[in-house]
Length: 375
Image 1 (cartoon, one colour):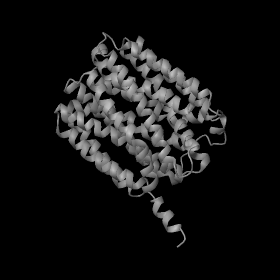
Image 2: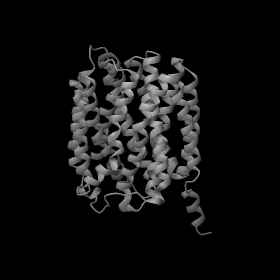
Image 3: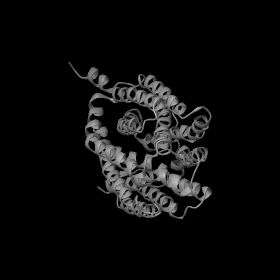
């Protein structure tokens, strides 16, 4: 319950940032496309260094690390209240990014340790529903504050929620964590997990960066509309995530990710072929819903990794995910300004095809279990 509360608080703060940030940049800061690409690349640098940050904190138990992560995250989010220039914007973004990206592997590790064997996907789905509920609360707050002259005050509220989450983590039992883990893990047998998380980083950046930018800057989507779309997404995820997690436990990761990447291919082709606002809104909602299937990457890692490798391997996955995230925004927006808005989305479609091919190399654990059952 404490972990769920901490997750609720962090995701509330994060969704406040996501729902209002693009309009904040446009209306308060007046940022240009290439500047935004540079900002996103710098913000993602801590994600690429996650494996090193986990190694530096190896002497601390996961609940204590999680508490520190949320504290740093909260300071960065609240810092947007004082942002007046691009350098201060970058500084606040990098600070909260450090806390958030160290939180991700530690949080997933604690969920996996708490879940019963064979029910990891179901419990990850339950926690995804909890974060969806917090997202719904967050977009409600953003919608309420959208008519104010400035969005800055909601960043203070988001930072306060993060602080509450940090206190919740302090109450989590130390039995959830372990000090018996290596500092760094990069093993050849985990190569497919690394590759898929790297490709997932590309998909995530196209969704978070280019799709939102296209809606706000090309089709003048208001902050209220972004909040409403996010609300639709979160309700769908809240209702479906536990069932999807249970389906992944039952049917296996390969089938789930195959369905995911086929869907993403058509979504990115749709982004590339249209600038119609209603179509963009629909694609944005479908794209967001498909994120639930990435639960499969975490459950797959649990099945192939040694128990002591779980936290550092998740950290290595976050690092691989963000190697793409550091480069994609700058390269993508440079190509956007040179060749047109559709180019990054064509690249996303190619990423979906590459991910689909790589997924077919995954071990089908459900088939293996059936083969091992006595006749």
